[in-house]
Image 1 (cartoon, rainbow, N blue to C red):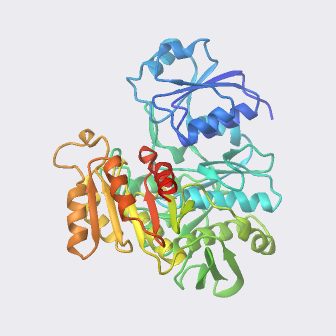
Image 2 (cartoon, rainbow, N blue to C red):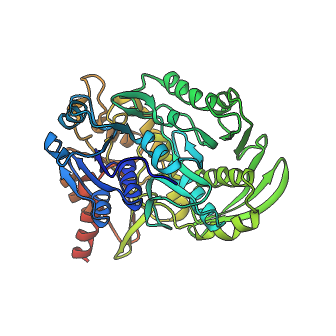
Image 3 (cartoon, one colour):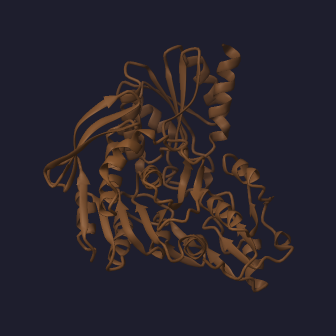
Length: 471
């Protein structure tokens, strides 16, 4: 493979999960890599430090000295960003992150794209791990750190590249959803729900984005879609390529039946076109993860991977960081970290936690910090989402001032609504006050689940440290 004519690549907004992965890919391929970000924080800042990639704090034209051959602009960067403006003013060639992935990672290989509102990271990680275990030496770029590889990227030399394709916009100079820039040999569509309220007005616009994705797939492609959801079925039916549906219902080509919790994971039987195919064990809790595994099994069968290889390799999947990840156990208290933030993901995660930790009291600390969860769109949906929790501690959304008056989510209201349906719930103006009450509540035998798509002011580590000191 011939490298494009660039030796120094500078990434603006480098600490995003995808941008950091791209930085690692470029570094491994021999490029000089630099980057900048407004507020570098772990785990990506640590990840980049370990790769010896310099990260400049803050955005400035000075960060472009010496002048890079190419700039990659992350989608967090806005048009008024002084560094992005300097890139344009100086005539430095620029790419969006998806364009850079196509140019530097995919190239002539076949892209396998995992998309959908939920489950992308776990499903893509499973796909990459099983391809690796089957000897296919895949490349990948995934929106989370895959424990089997201790990385969220891999260059690889095999014929396949696994990409997590999301519906968020590409860059300030390209408002298309990221996944529209990929041309998949095979795609997985896990779900379609409303999200990203800062760029989509409603579910109809989200659906239009996914419809554009499935209808632009190349004629040689294949689509594996969740068949239990009517909306996913209707969108998938518009694709020009063969579609294989998976799910827990009897009308899907690929079905999972006889689900049984087993240790930290699930046993289940797989049926293909109504006939028993094989029984599997996956070290992942919850029905939603059985669906994720089923999507990957259907995909790999379409790619010609033997099911016996998959059965042997699946139990060795080590999961993804921040997906029901046990961080520590102190004095009988288990502390778990999870990325869930959308109400559907919150409900599925709590259900999975109930199955994984049966009979134990479940305390949940929740930070609504996404552009969608800071809005009142899901105010009532969250009331139902937390039904499996025993105690819920909700922080006021950070940067709530960015949301217009009348559209803001209320942690006070959520706590009141949860109390009204018989649950114990608290609201807090900040993380410090939440941590104080959480420590006073915690008792031996409890499971504490911290849920946020951000750092939550380092709550998870502060909690473990405080419990250890208390013990």
